[in-house]
Amino acid sequence: MKAIKKPDLNAPRFREKSIGIVTNATLDKFKQKFPKYKNLSLEEFKGIVNAFNGNICDGIIGNRNGVELPEGLGFIFIGTCPPAKNADNIDYKKSFEFGVKATHRNWDSDNKLCKIFYTNHNTKYPLSNKQLWSFKPVRQFKRKTSAAYKEDWMRYIEVTPDEKISSRFTKHKRKQHMEKLNSQIPEDYNEFNVT
View 1 (cartoon, rainbow, N blue to C red):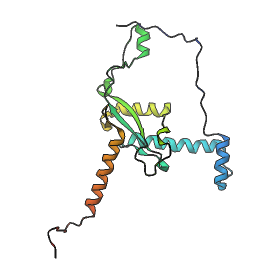
View 2 (cartoon, rainbow, N blue to C red; view 1 turned 120 degrees about the vertical axis):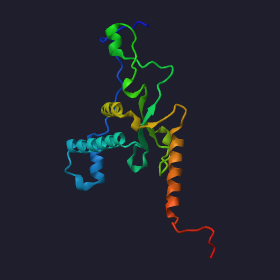
View 3 (spheres, rainbow, N blue to C red; view 1 turned 120 degrees about the horizontal axis):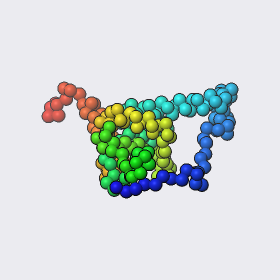
């Protein structure tokens, strides 16, 4: 067992600067584009954005296949993955308590991991520079996902480490296309009847 030291909580830290999107400047642009909402306050605007994002999060958690984002921005879904072979999933609270390195064992999910996947590979409308787009979930969404995953981890799609997410969507699209083709053929159709 490896010993572990407590971090110095009073040491200097680097904090990455974040940029807020829902600001007065964004609200002004929104009002210019949609003048009928000129009386909308910043608090109401934030509430609408937060409610919409909350509904998207609930949809991702509640739907096994995830959610397609509006405006063709991509797909987000929750996947079940096996644990990494060489990575340690350290439980810092227990490690500091006992003085040795302790790891999470994920007993709730049979040692499987929950991951949030984002892809924009097979969107309806190709985005320019789509390889630059990414998705970073907020803390509330991660915690909500983790709690739902512990309750019913078998519900979510299993993703192997060597699988490309884009190929999974390609297979699903082909399957939907074939189902659509099969539904268009009448039941009394006989391909050998030439008359």
